[in-house]
Length: 295
Image (cartoon, rainbow, N blue to C red; front, side, top):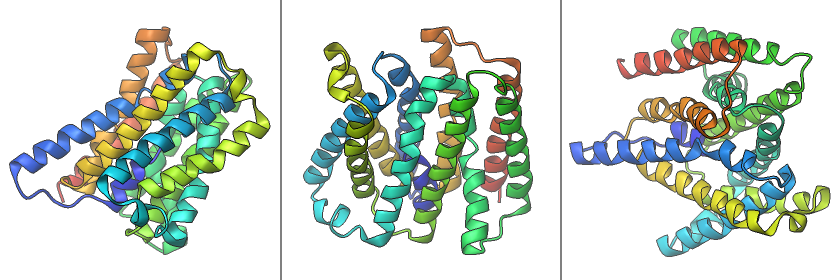
């Protein structure tokens, strides 16, 4: 769930073609891996709190191993500062909605609503930081908002509406994380992610019973934690070699990839409203980022 934070917080221009190619490949891998979140969630019978618990527990373990090998444990944890704490709390609020959203609505709906996060972040940055968005972002944001309305409208009166509302909340929270990193760019990435998962462990134990999950599904949820850690790390590394707008553009591929995998493995076919809204949102994302790249 930390991918969009890097779009604003990182993104040094590459110095060589090799660096650029490396960055491109790493961000592509990150987008592909992040797109499997819905598959892991829907692929198990365990409830959302069990998924949150086991995925978070193993994500913490794998990420801690990474920062230990990297030699940045103190910097990432004890020195994360108030901004790191803010990012962790807001991120945990988003994750608490992210997993249940997949259980209550389609993968396509969650992925496409979340694709609008950069535009929500632009609005929050305008309100909080008085950072005036460009006309390109304003028009694209209105278009993306229209797309979200199409998607949610298609769920009104149906069972998916709760999942869509959770996806909207998750998008708002993750957009908040983006802006935190935008305002405090020296905030570490791994430490707040670890803390975010740790915050949710007792919550998941209180509201659910993770140990009642089928034993054969725990390795699947552990794998979810591993791929989340891999996706976060590859994004952080890749974003160092690409402009932030290009990182955002490539990361947006997560949505169509998620929809393709959902169709391939679960035969999920998006409804007309989802298709219409999704096209509008993705066009807004791609067109706005391409125009930013041409500046």
